[in-house]
Length: 349
DNA sequence: AATCTGACCAACCGCGTTCAC
DNA sequence: TGTGAACGCGGTTGGTCAGAT
Image (cartoon, rainbow, N blue to C red):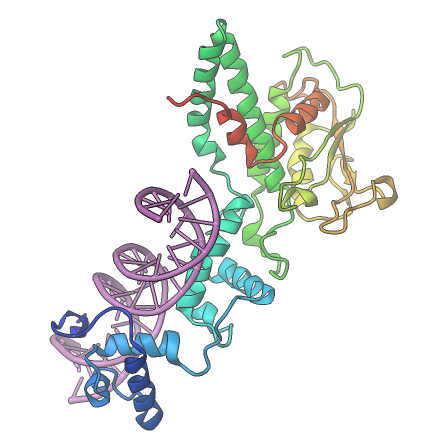
């Protein structure tokens, strides 16, 4: 379709508006309304194109425009609406009286987007970022190179580091998936499209347990309850503050096939759930947990009644998760530091 | 004091849609 | 119904300013 030719016309002024031009535009619109924007500049005595006049009026001169810093409520509203509407700035602006789409767009690009990224969220999906995986090969390569430079037995070190990095990334991603969705906005209703898929969680849980086998293919049962502690809260107090610790309890009546149901229920934030095959997990009473911080109190530990050896030989070995949980918290206190930890002190290449 | 860098935001550009003829 | 002008919207640019080096 035809594009407006007005901006292509030569001889029309561009760039910042002067106070005199503003006054002409305001006075004309107050007296006559804007009518046809194309005809307005000539009628108002402005050497501007109609489009420029319209933008100046709608984004800056309109009397009902609210200027100044965005309030916490406005910020929250933008987050809510953006999680639903995406970059529909005009639609978002329609819910914020006095704010223009341009202003909201600028505020988003300069503040909110960065804020979400810092908190570990994808600003487009409002879900925890998973791009750790896409960058993992790069991280591992550099980490391996570091080992190579520092350690003569670099092959072994690199392999170990690779395994640890991959394991950590999986665990962190699993923790992200188990958060109550979505957390970028406390006002947003829980919508199913923010929930991780059952398969997604199942695959991660299985791969974690599988790779934690200490004695492969021996079917050694898990002999004592083991707890996966949540990682430390990040600097902003999110998102790990909502994460329960996971207690894996040996239970001969359960099978690994119950894990998808466990995972599914964990997403639902229920306090007590009975799954198939006598599988169950529950949130212990709050009295068993340390006193919560003033803001964003953590959920109490989550007990998972987990099976021991399974008929499925891929998953049937013992899990030594306590050391895993301990190392995870000490090596990478939060997800944002994983890359930092690996890159830290790496000489420039 | 000079230069650099990044944040901020008004304004522009260009595409898709709507409207009038 | 087809066409072109007008409009609306989202992405991008570029000027300004403040803080860091």
